[in-house]
Amino acid sequence: KPFTLVLLIVMSCGIGLGSSHLRAADANDVDAMPTFKLANNMTVPMIGLGGCSGVRYKAVKSAIDLGYQFIDTAQAHSWGYHEEEVGQALHEAKRRYQDNNDDFVFVQTKIHPQDLGYHSTKRAIQLSLDRLQVTSLDSVLIHKPRCWGDICSHEPEGTWEDSWRALEEAVDSGLARSIGICDVDNRLLDKLLSKRIPPMVIQNWFDPFHQDKAFRRRIESINKEQDKLGKVDKKILYQGYSTLGNQWKYQGYEENPVFISPTLLAIAKKYGVSIPQVLIQWANRRGVMVLPASNNPSHQLSNLKSYDFTLTEREMTSIDALDGKPPQQLHKERDTNEVDIQFTNHADGPVDVFW
Image (cartoon, rainbow, N blue to C red):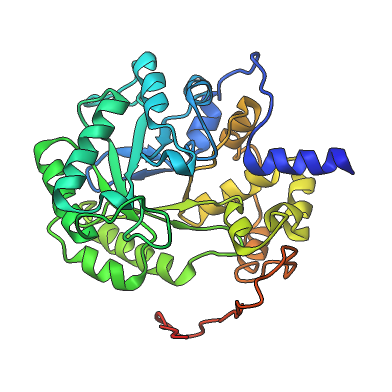
């Protein structure tokens, strides 16, 4: 039992002892991996390395050596990101984007919500340029559209809309190639689509029990309309964060429900693969880019090999059916002053709930 518990923790957090004898992903793995053409005509893979959970220089270097071409990071050290160490590994790899060059590493960073505001965002952009040792950012996102609780150490100078103006100017000047934002709902998307430069990337919480279906359908509709017109300038890449279930610990779960799901365990056992591999393929085939964080080279490589098998449509649908149904097993002591209520929205659009 103690061994099993340790194994689950390692799989969940992506932290463990790696091997120095791993071979990089081969051409077949790269060819099988789906890609997405951004609104700026850059093509990116749908599997990248997430930079939270304490992913540092050594892990980023191993990922690049293994064949990763997309690294996600952020400025927030308090959330487990180490942007400057990503920059060190990137600089040493000498794999920056150049016109007509397919062998490059795309790097995405995110601006902390405490730096919302026009001038503060401009300063934050320069900070990322310096930390990443680059002259332009492949992608820069607003990490959260607002501050809440104690996540910000100081009151931001302005709003996400002030920051967006600074991001648009960064695109104009060549300091950023693509821009976007995290934690977007339909109301915020309405405002974003009216901007001079609409979002090229949106990153939301997405896992088997929290699939963000209604919002994703809207993104899919926008992208399909662009395809019909033969255009890409308004296409939006939907990225999922915490796809392996990491967010559930903030919902009171002591054990990650993703790694104890009978449905996912049965599918993984059938193919002799890991649950992360099952979820990566499922998410990609549902149009979601995934960014699993891992310090373990073996896990990094297996994530890239998530297309060595093919999920049946029935298996895909069985995972779809997990949405909104995490095991109701809350073990942490609850605050008696709190009330926990779950709502299921059967409407076509968003519903505001006031308590």
